[in-house]
Amino acid sequence: MINDVVNTLKTGDISGWDDFLKCLPDNWREIAEGSGVLKGQRKDKDPETLMRVLMLHLLCGYSLRETSTVAEEANIASLSDVALLKRLRKSTGMFRGLCSEMFGEFRNSDDLSDYRIRVVDGTIIKEPGQFGTQWRFHYSFSLPDMTCDSFRLTKAAGAGTGEGFEQFEVKPNDIMMGDRGFCRFNCINHVAKNGGYSCVRWNSGALRLYNEDGGDFDIQGLFKRLPVEGMCGEADVFIHGGDPGERLRCRVCVIRKNDESAARARRILRAENSKKNGTPSQLALLACDFIVLITTLPPDTFSLERVLELYRLRWQVELVFKRFKSIARIGALPKYTDSSAEAWLYGKMFAALLVERISSRLGAFSPWRAVACSGGAQKFVERVQGIVAHRDTVGHPADQTGRS
Image 1 (cartoon, rainbow, N blue to C red):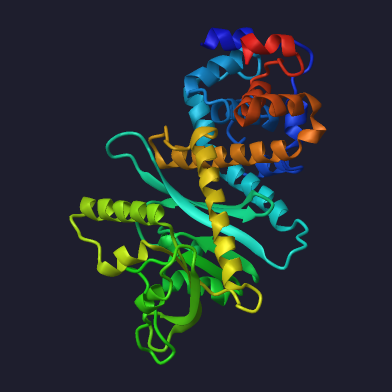
Image 2 (spheres, rainbow, N blue to C red):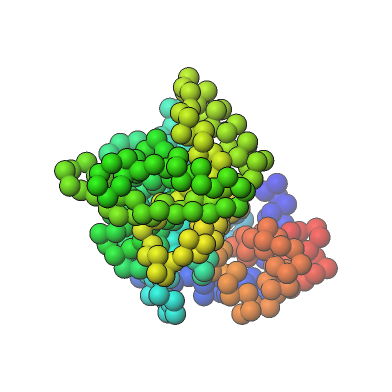
């Protein structure tokens, strides 16, 4: 495989690498030098050389040994796989700084709407081996610009590592949307304290609903008033915190599912409880017939129907994670130490952000535009990987069949 890759290196005069570098933040070299990643290196101290070698490993998916071989055969750099691992471990600060720079550009971009819709989720990434460390990847996806506006890496266990809106900086008029894992008082209250709004799927076992007088809200009564598929209803409710008098006004918004969706939800619920040797409550089974949302969005601006339509956008984040786990390949973590694992994750996140940025600029790169339109997202990513590896099949349709 390495021989096939090496044979396609430097086959023309146009590599596309200069265009690739233009997609990095303007001050990426200063960020690299300021992070200290180049300190202690006896040779190849150029940040561009380092970036290219690291992208071979992170974006092209080569192992450390393969990366070392390809880099040397292409006259990019001469270093062993051990030396490359050391540089990767030192690159955490650089990739973190580059990601922050790109997020800053997203946050500071002009937004004509009054609200910023943010779909938030998380996933577990595990290091290899029976006792490999598990990391939790917290991710916020901004709509309608379809970009990642923030992410954070934490260990999967321990204080302050759980899923929650608390993992993110919330600004006024941010609309934070999440699944049942975000249905907690502290989570929703964190958003409200910072001037934002929440819209989450209700978890009957995690969040009790109350009337204004402190009595339990009759959610089953609301369900009974919606006997037909597609019927909607809402009510004002309160949620309570752990401290006396700590509470927050919310709305519960409900729409009845069709019979097929409800039956599937009950099967999933029973299967999940069976794994834990438990039995689902009657309320949880009844709630399977409905989509139940808890939101702090103001009713004068966001009607019941608008809230329900808004939450349907949450599926976008599921597509993001599918792209990351397939194209960016972050479903598994091929590193055994905390330092290398953290550097690898930040590097993968930066590579994924670069793919998003390049795809949004297709009009500036005519050879890429033709490939992206004809071959789809996977073909486009393969062509970007080819540019990183210095393979020049870009813009040469006759050569694409045997080299891409």
